[in-house]
Length: 396
Image 1: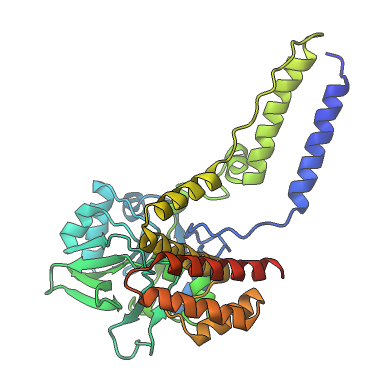
Image 2 (image 1 turned 180 degrees about the vertical axis):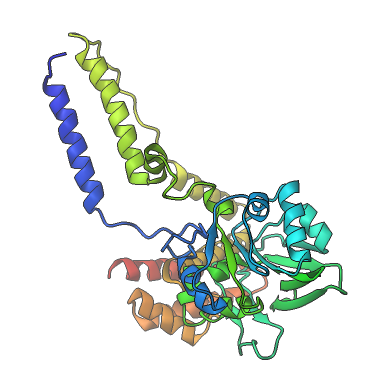
């Protein structure tokens, strides 16, 4: 087929797109991946690189196969540790059997996750539960039970909503190592045979953000210090699957990179369009289809007007406060459990706004939190203060 202008248009478009993707600043990704290869806030690369010195080992082995395969097909050292850090853990019957036998022989396993297999929990005598969400901020302080590890004021992991906690059943074999502000267990040790399971219900504490943060930097190392200094295995199968970078095919690697994935789709779609338009001399007119409109903002405004017109001012005001504080935590990294002058000063510095405006807003939020039921006038004043603050931030 003779090349024509469509081919060169497609080639120029691909070249421009590739250059744009290559030189575009990479956005900060806040997804909690828990991968030991990720430098993002909620990856675990920092902890993984520091773990050998903590365990006094030359290196920590990364495991990219199921528990069953690792414990039955690979020759293990006489005694070792096995570390899992993930949002949720999933073990089948074979994995569970081999993991229990591994600990029973005198080894140790650390499981840091929000969600654990129910069968394993029943065997070890614990459950991981979630409290119902509430309107107010549910940020909780965590701390160790060991007086030598306790920190005055505790540890605040403000990206965690404080709803998760553990319930233990076997007091004989279980020792609570850490609790939250509600005195609920967050970190426990369960003896099984000659070894121990360490169950941690807050995996975010082991991520880059909190390991590097000055206020929480020592928490992960204190939690891991309960493990003896032995050869240690770090599981990545639960997060990244079986294949590492050396075992991936070219296509698998392309599909694992967002920029390359989109480039691949653009090439395929572009070639299809080229065949369709260049393969025929004439083509019927393609009708113009209006893109779907994003009505999210109108929907939120409508819901707000409904609550306002129905006189449910307290609910509306509490929602406004909840969403505003969530934005402050996620955008500026400030804890919002205590609204005082120090918080107002920190917020003023982070947003580069006038301190008087910030203090006025904080006083209004404090008054709204103390009020049993917000009235229509209270909601209007609250909205006025929030809009004044947002305007001051946007003008900078």
